[in-house]
Length: 287
Image (tube, rainbow, N blue to C red; front, side, top):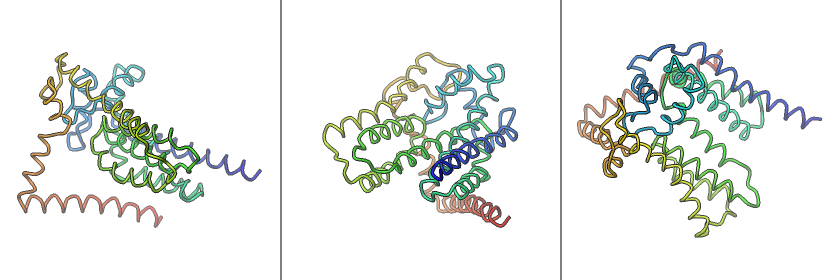
């Protein structure tokens, strides 16, 4: 009876961790194209609507899922559909944060409180109400963390294959996921010491990861179709590599870091930005 009650509480917390943020996100959701100061909502929405090519790295997963999502929700008001897409993935991310906290603490109220605190951090809340790519990125990040935290079993091969495929798909959404790879491998080795990296298993893991990354090939397909909205069309292999790796952005970033004043200004901006999020957490705790 006690285990059944605990199971029911876990499910209740999961439902609340999804429903509460989603309701708030929808109520506060932008009904039009968000101002450019908040992100690339206008460009991304246009690219999805015409199946074009957004700015580097191209976000093929976002473009594809946004296109299919738009078929079923408000096709006559596409930007509202894309804003709703961000809200749904944000709520799914919060639910995964709740499940992660449940694995760490085993207490529903603590896990739910942590998840809702994360849900209403100013920067995350803002991204959940506009057409942007970041809530899908956080969804993939939380999903992979949740999967690698699964209890070890006698055979974790299928879990490793699933993580490899999801990681590959996440790379087709945002290449920033690459920074997770070293820590992900180390954690898997530590968490699952009995897992044997045989040549066969390594080959399957690489193939599944590459299968997800293949979504980037749709950029070349769309480029040859000459959509009305696109960045410099990646019609060749070298152009595709430049677009996916954000070569233009890297040049802009590293050229600005050569200037000490510009680098210091960027560092101070990031520090203040993070401080605002931390102060908000302390404010919630004090209530």
